[in-house]
Length: 451
Image (cartoon, one colour):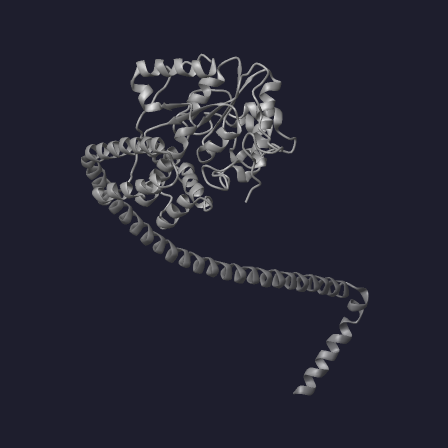
């Protein structure tokens, strides 16, 4: 599929970037969507010595311009993210005038989510070239490169193998994560559910992902769909099992949000590995909402357990499988707790939804009746309009006839006046008066002949 990059110690052609002259290595932060990844990126970004990239494989990098990058921030959608400068500011020195970054190809976002040989495979030469360019850009500015993304879990081992680095894996309770996906979808933003579906569909070269895609091929990218949720949950468990051994540090956002002592320990561990003073005290986590519909809960739980056996046999280490099992248990506990507390509320809202549906159906029926009446009225109006048009034509014809008659009458009156004028002229002439006796004699003679 893609040209592979050999691991360290392999023949020439290896494109990885070594530590800088001070021995400082780049930091990679891997996570999934809606796991507080933007919050953690922001914590590193605020440090004066770092150059922190957000979403190094984001599909928008294929065509984004500086003007577009300027507009993309926490305010342009209902992200729940803390205030910050525009997300893609750090990429701007690399944007071409026509848009996009020369080293980035759209296939890097999802089609190459897994290396060609699966989670344990190697990065392609193109991916390495892109990462190298980002690292060199940060170093040219005298900064420590921080590279984050929500599209790297499938290639986390490959990145770790290719780059001397500090690798952080950020996780969140998977059911809480789904609730965030759900709430976004219910607000009209199905992006995160759709991307889960897209990743699984695009990963046919990975045996496990292909099996998962085939088994739940009837899933719908909707927040209430059980098959979609199973696909999401199982795929994340598989990813975490394989990512575990590549992580130098795992941050569980739920755990550090509720345990300040653990949070302080994590801050110290980050410093020991990176020499960066990170303040994690602004961490927050919450459960938003979901309309997930689970049929039989026991069947559901058992199905997940059977998939865990497949994950255990997929090549992940035993410690990685145990970590995935812990993530599974915590997610299912939260699902079970949500089901218990939400049951009564769900019934109440189902009743409301049924009433709303009945009201909607009634409104729809009335609307249809109104539309039918409106259609009839429209026909009548059209008929009346046509009749009016015909009447207007008749009136115009009669007006034309009247105009013509008036013109004829005026002509006749003019001729009559001219005749009267000529007659008066004749009667008043001297010849008419001289011949008066002759006309009278003629009339007398004519009268005698008749008798």
